[in-house]
Length: 115
Length: 114
Image 1 (cartoon, one colour):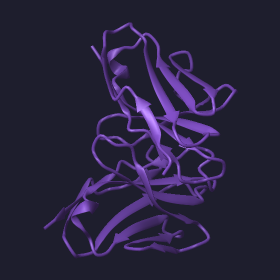
Image 2 (cartoon, chains in turn purple, blue):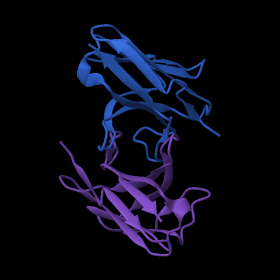
Image 3 (cartoon, one colour):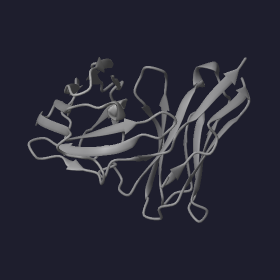
Image 4 (cartoon, helix red, strand yellow):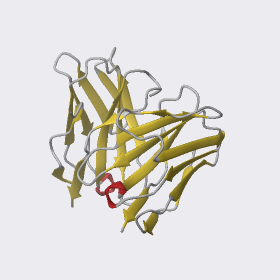
């Protein structure tokens, strides 16, 4: 079946540094990729939607300058958390969509801890 | 403002019995509903979905029921098996295909006891 690979699975960084998370679709070309964030005991919250070759669409309340999304190809999307702060510590997960398929495929997630 | 609510953080069911996971939503614009299953250290995997034009969809041991007037859906698993132990997320979308992304509930941790 389709696989979405997300790296790294866990990252610990110092406050003020930037962290890049990669999401790759391995068996298919993803027309759309979504980035979600999950705080402890909360639900997955959609952060942004990106389509290959175009700028990402951010959800209300998500800072586009802080969470940089690049979807340069149909198989790769990256999320960069710039100048990370402890409040950015969260679980980040990507999902990819093939055409009109409603079965979104998820990566395994990245646990970010900012010290 | 939680648009999709799963009010039971956990549910314990004996192996062989029926598991019923519930989900409520508030946004009447939602037209498509999905259930995802998640194991630790893995991403959610799609389980079953239902469109608002239906009230039931069945796939093997899994059946999803939708009561649109009550804005309520439920996932039935019968018979429950040990491998069903996982976190189950209810999700909703305004469009088939989730073009607008999905709105998730907090999840219910299902524990199947032998």
